[in-house]
Image (cartoon, rainbow, N blue to C red; front, side, top):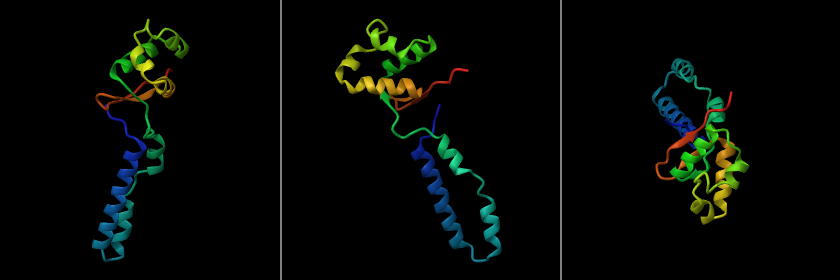
Length: 128
């Protein structure tokens, strides 16, 4: 599963723009410009707005798995912090650096994060 970040969308937009510049340089007749610009139908502002932020929280796979399970079980963030050892939420990771608590909380709230070991982006479905 692949999700695009804002940087990915910007890169696609830049490539499209650069391709247009090359085509513009190759086309010398005015009549071809209209046909060229009619082919650009991607609403880039919509794609960019829907893209994920570049600075996603990065958490270890074990923590990612526990977070997914906790969300599926409808556990609360407070419960996860209070019972991290019971839930095997990798006390070592949380204790390793106090910023890890913030990273975990951001991942929890956003419902999206990057897995440290694989680079995979995990995005949880919103409750309906």
